[in-house]
Length: 289
Image (cartoon, one colour):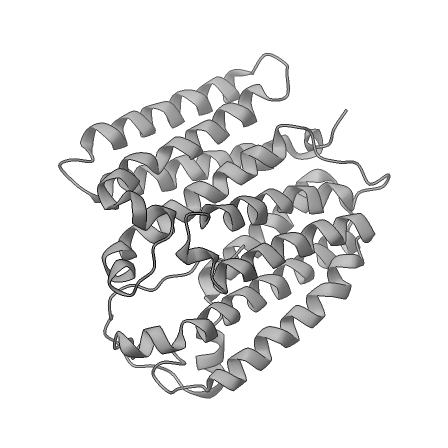
């Protein structure tokens, strides 16, 4: 699921034509999610063809979401003076970005279903949730829900494409959904003042920046607990170490956050990295018994 920003204007020239269209898809989060899910497919035991299909399906889905986001936000970005944004800055037309979004979405459908009808339906549900966020849910108290659904669908998409089409273990989907909620909070935090000025009142905006800073590490720490204790077997040294590191990072972020507003954000990113490492390390244990 692609994260998005609508922050205050940032300086810098806007590239033109094809580079501008690429920039409009939110390339960094698009690449990050694609690489992460592909790595998860490799770790879970999907064959080479299956991993390629996962990468292609996730990439097209993320591209469609990123382009949809920039097309929807074009008027708001222009009003806020976001000349660094490709559509608002006039480097690429809104029509071209919408065309790219729908083309990527059209490609995502068969690429997702190529992993099997159930796996494909699960992935497309996550993509649909991300589009719903872009198209209006981000301005409501339910802004967290598309992130939870989008991130939660990804490990299920991977495991359901394995031979036998197994569902993921019970703890995998909620752990991924919690990662999504943490990503939502961390992504929105820098933009809360500008969002409120633009009339966007999603869940984080209603909480306010101070509460969001405090809350960011909490869902990520909860995800760590699920990933370590969920399998039901006594954790090994690596599991206990992950819990200790995540707990220390969360406590440190909360304790030092008053003096430096960036500390909770950095701590949250570090806890998220621990969670991603755990998710990849679980590999073939992600499927239900």
